View 1: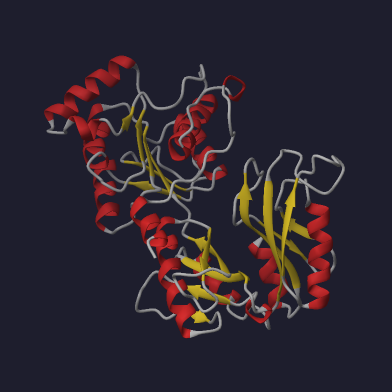
View 2: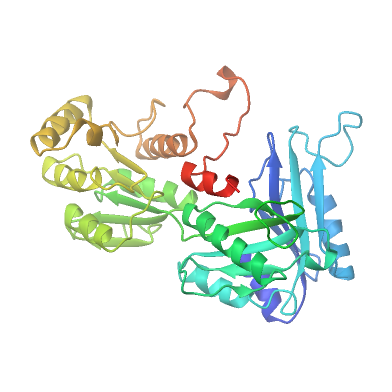
Length: 386
């Protein structure tokens, strides 16, 4: 979607840009999902998976024509099932604006940051008592020494939103923040949607085996930047892992330690140890389980391999708290047998742990299908204490 938008922008033309900024109940797409309507009428991206695309398409064409951005709510109508709405029963708020070199001069720099895996956030005013503020934006980087590009309308508003946008960017969250009309912490009237573009999360797969090839494909499908690492050069080749972003020949524990020292491991990083060979997996798990930021650590092996691995890790000095972070045997119980099926079970485990899912069939559960994202408590307190 970004590529299509950037192509239109570089050509000096104007696109309609629709972004999901708020969801209620069982909405099909999360905040940040976007759709681009090109000058020739073609569409890329999606805001609802099909439920309200036609209505958003028409609104985008209107906004491009008038130049006036719009915040529009779409939801299911109990009175008229054929009305424009979400048949899943959810509600979405969509912000629609025109995107061109005149209205979004920072887009080129934003695209370069994203392509270079540099985190960047875009804060856009989506509601304000003064209509002239709507559509104004700030481009924010995590470094406090790097000034934000653009302006929302006042220095006070810019300072408040820049500070909070950096917090959301650190968490990789897309969220609406509310302020007074001039950016007052105690107030309401101005709503700002912050879209965080953090680098793709990493999936580190240790062990260049056939299961790793299948998992690399799953990781790429889920949006991870996949690295396959193995000390055996004959197996760790780009030819065997065409979907991996990089294939590294190195001892797993040494590579992981270097990556951690370089600050390349964060809370979204997934570490999958598939070697099931003590001389490889025990040293790398010693490093992985002591990394405070790694979001997921899993290891493949039978029950017997798992028990032996735990004995070796305890002998190496790992605590029970550290061992409790290990997902082993890796994956959910899907009855998987083939490498491809096993990769699905591993991916399912990663998704369930990320979003708090229980791994049970939805038919056996009640309540909402989609789990709420959990914002770090300290940051939530920072947003609500004023």
